[in-house]
Image 1: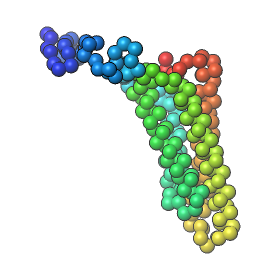
Image 2: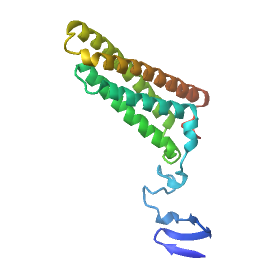
Image 3: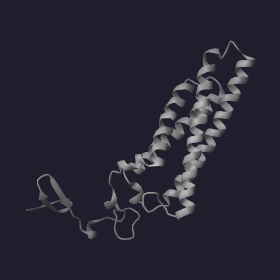
Length: 192
């Protein structure tokens, strides 16, 4: 049994299963024609990514990022503002990377994904390194100079800085993993 809908012919193969085919002439300029960077035919859910080393690291980085954001909020000193910015930035971008891998966007867009992710993990690692050092030093200095001002934030900021060290190490491990894959295989994505 075949029905025609707006997108092209649709064939019903079994109860509950539908196969959709489209003509190449109906695809727009960015719609995925031959040679296009946008080919949505390969888009699928990849739940097994989160069983891989980078997938597990992303989940842990994300959870530690939540803890960092919770501990450093509300920021009362300049270093806490910077640390909060770094934690939120890395939290959001790591979530975006998790979505990119979960929805297999790496197989849809023809980009050097591994190289881009290698650059991002290096950036996140560097930002966390700078942020946790500045937060821990500034918190210790502020407590020493003004014990009455930051007494209620000292423990939270030191905890945030400690979790920042953990996230720095996690991003460093992920960066080393991506660098190893890039050097060994030279592939553009991990999943291909």
